[in-house]
Image (tube, rainbow, N blue to C red; front, side, top):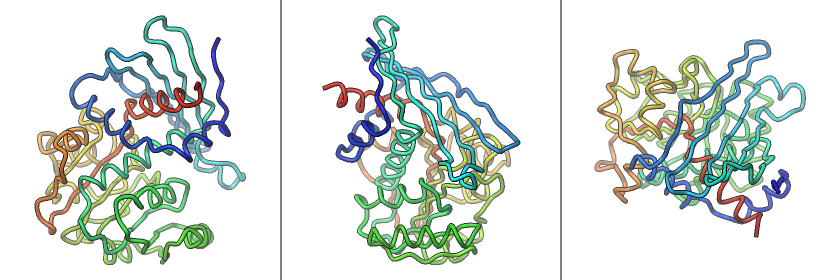
Amino acid sequence: MTKIHTLEQIRSVTESADFTAAIEAGFVAYSNGDVVVPPVGELIFDSPPGDTHIKYGYIRDDTVFVIKIASGFYGNVALGLPSSSGLMLVFSQQTGFLESVLLDEGHLTNVRTALAGRIAARYLAPKRVNAIGVFGTGTMARMQVEYLATETGCRDVVAWGRANDSLARYREDMSALGYTVVTTRDSRDVTRACNLIVTTTPSTAPLITVEEIRPGTHITAMGSDTAEKQELDAGILGRADIVAADSRAQCEERGEIHHAIRGGQLTIDRVVELGELIRAGASARTDDEQITVADLTGVAVQDIQIAKAVDDLLSK
């Protein structure tokens, strides 16, 4: 019989368990060639603006395969609704039968994305973080900062946003969690103060120019998960000492790496996969002055790993 797990049940598990090791193992398996991940299924909507991604695949010799549907509709905030929604389907790899439905409403996608940001910082961020910069004021802008708490003791945040009211809410919410938050609508306030920056917006035009980036800066870019979206000036990737992708194949088609290759700023042979960094087991940085970028477009193996782990815990 197919099990159905509600968002409330799923949250009860994700609030008490750490899935970092599972996501790391998934990235390594992907870079080792042990994961089958077809191209992303994608629907792009203009009015209202939004997108729906279908990501799916399996790890060879595993017990399950997973299909994830996740949507982002960015006008939902004005309607008093979350911008993201979705679900994950867990099937038996032996019979093809549907074993579980995870009605996570996009929560597991948020968790696995925040974990990827944590992992990227673990292998690429400077040892001493002066301040954390975040572009965006939504759920991911909050979760990314919270999940970095395991990697740095820094609690100083500079947050960029387009609207004063959303910036005020972000400052209030994050201050309640013990962070000192400065808000701004000028990207230069972020790049001047912060050497660990996370971008979490659906922007289709660069928010940061190459001239703004100081030596020693790490950027984790995760908002650009389609071919249309872009948060970074392509020159930043051209200037970077290390450019990491969650998936080289996927980032050639979407995200910041896609734009940098198309603009002649980068070649794919300069890109290392996150799974390769994890497999090496040490920080990729060899110099405090290096500029590093992680381009995270979201890979189905992350969904496989977190869906499997959550389903196992809920089925006990």
